[in-house]
Length: 212
Image 1 (cartoon, one colour):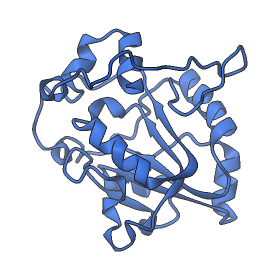
Image 2 (cartoon, rainbow, N blue to C red; image 1 turned 60 degrees about the vertical axis):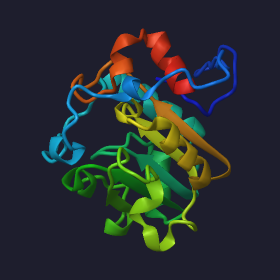
Image 3 (cartoon, one colour; image 1 turned 90 degrees about the horizontal axis):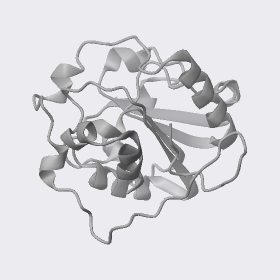
């Protein structure tokens, strides 16, 4: 897993390597973000998948990491979410006490209805980020400009976005000053839906793509 937010280094529980792209201009083109299966994503994700897409040790490690970086007040958004968000108990407690609100955008309503972090249907939206405007707040148009977050998470999904620059640019506007975005990746994927470049890169290359 990798966090784009943590800049600490050293040998602590979550050591990080700062990354600076070696290029001045985006080196990828539109073809790099084509998929083998270009049918509508809403069709592919229509069937709920009530499984975890990473193994138990990874889930435990991710939950532990979240416990060191996620706020327990304000607002969090889980982008490309599902029926589980792997947030720690302290975050769940903060939701129950109403110190914290957790929002979600994903592609399957049944999955999000089962995610206990979203207190009601106002806190989640079915939203395809591969379609314009590529903005996580587009599901709440009545308060889009006023809705901002103290943290944003995205677990093993950034590799399915066909317009990652546009999505990430919009995340800047959706994140409060001092807020953090945590992009988590793994070596698992749906090969027919992941972007083409992802399948061509080594694990380090994938980290650098996300870092870029």
